[in-house]
Image 1 (tube, one colour):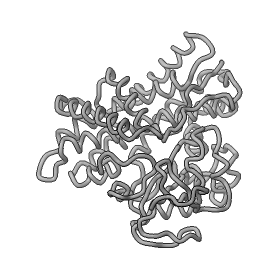
Image 2 (cartoon, rainbow, N blue to C red):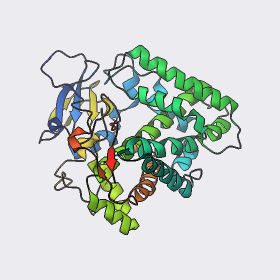
Image 3 (cartoon, rainbow, N blue to C red):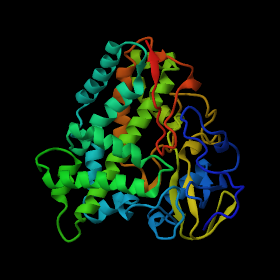
Length: 391
């Protein structure tokens, strides 16, 4: 399915995280768009329609990797990159991966708090204005993911570069694939040399990857790469966006500071309120159906904007209002259905601990008007280039 109508709107509409793009608002829950790759797709912005796509088997994520299927950006490097959890399941590794990502036995609470404190203390020591993206969001996300993965902290500069490059849209296919090969080969080497007694996903899953259903070393390295990239970018994006919003809301920071138990409501509302997805969750329709009043055909590419779904006024009254007391708050930041993000607990836990530490810095506020904050262009995970602040 290639584009034949140049008048179709081009998606994504924006990679700024300060507000939902105007084109994502409105009453049309399913609309036709053109992707970065020049293919036609159905963009889903309505909340019930998004839940249906992410829940029903007729909309398959794994089929995006099929030869000839329409794509968002560049062709997928390897099929396990799109269906990492399914590959872990077939190899008997999924439950252990979920345990390590959900119970977080290798990520002590005090270490997370200390990392956030150290970053903020360094920022204050260097003097105003500070940068919360660098000294807070990335400072917390990087070490947290290295600890979860069981990777040396010294690897972080290279891992961060590979992750940032992988999630940059509009790069040549060859550059994207070459970048991923470097990340995969690095993780392959780490897996081959790791000490099974060291905590973390890399040594644990490598030790367990045995038997007739075992993944090949390259497959396992690819899956581990997906976990690191998704975990690091989601955390750095969320914490950066949350810091941007809270620096504009002194009342919210004061509430967290005086009542730390309130932080969970703020985390949930920030997960809904923040615009964090530069592209969309892609699925292939494997059985023609009707969705949102539109007729979808077998083989159609379907793109779900969870950002737009989180602003659907039928589900979230006054969606533009920031309301940490919002109950219920069934946002779709982590997806829905069988592919619900296994790192949801990680983001929630890290977010709550880090934002509690951030709120201790009294007088925190943006150093520039909100519209002057710069955002990384063309990113799949929307992230501020910097969050300049005063205190």
